[in-house]
Image 1 (cartoon, rainbow, N blue to C red):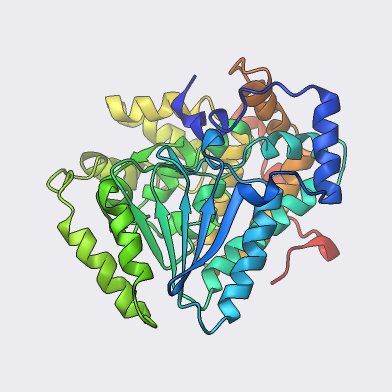
Image 2 (cartoon, rainbow, N blue to C red; image 1 turned 135 degrees about the vertical axis):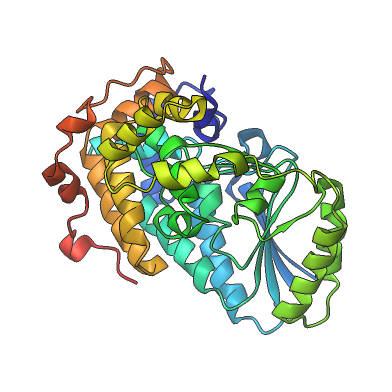
Length: 392
């Protein structure tokens, strides 16, 4: 199973839900019925000077579901108004993941989308509203991105002011492999990374690990995982801290960290190629660039890209190009349009089937060739939803 699918594969898809159970889960979400253990899936605590959010599903790599999303959002808004809360810390339980994406919710959303049920609208809407709330949060927001951080986990961290990686952090946005696109604001932060790095990460689903997550500009700090507990204690012990006080504590731990300190960025030697080969405005040109280059690195990327949904590749490239000149909120409005178009299309449901349900890893994309994905097809994904648009 290709590692590009890790955040979906790992996220509880060892379960094979029959259609009755799936429908039941969807109905539960639509009614927002309380699961007996819903309160335990995310812990929301006031500690010292901070509000602490702990994603508490370690067995499922802290994958996000609808109930957790709503709980976090409401608590975030409460703490933002609370004069006694000076910062917000978000972390994942266990050693394996901060948050590995969207759990069985991805399958549920696909089922709901096919059945034209409201979950397919509501989940993306509320997730993107949460991403925006993190970006605009008036309190310093510290995400401890220890372990797997993908999909929805990226959305819960990357828009905050401080993102702390460890040697065990694994970052990726592999959505083109399931007929989707790197959402949760990917159209905003990815094109703002150095050179064409964000384009490369988005189109190939390449995984960054450890200190490379900091060197890429996704994390703001890097600390040794064994010091995370002490770092958190030092943050909680601050008295009425300012952003500068918080930054100072993080900087001390970052400076003390010695793991892979002298190692160069994993893509350093390839950045020249990435910047030139991925600078084209069309997928066809990027493919041609890779073919003409012919280096082992270029051919490896070509092999990976050729497995992805041609429609996803085209909408992702345009998403990133358009995102360079938009605010995060404008990007999220655009991405919401894309999400709903994907629900009405073929490839997302086929990708979910092939990767998450049947697990045959052989999606049959329609169209199957880039040349068959017309400009008109792509334009349709970006069309306004009128009164259903996500407006901030």
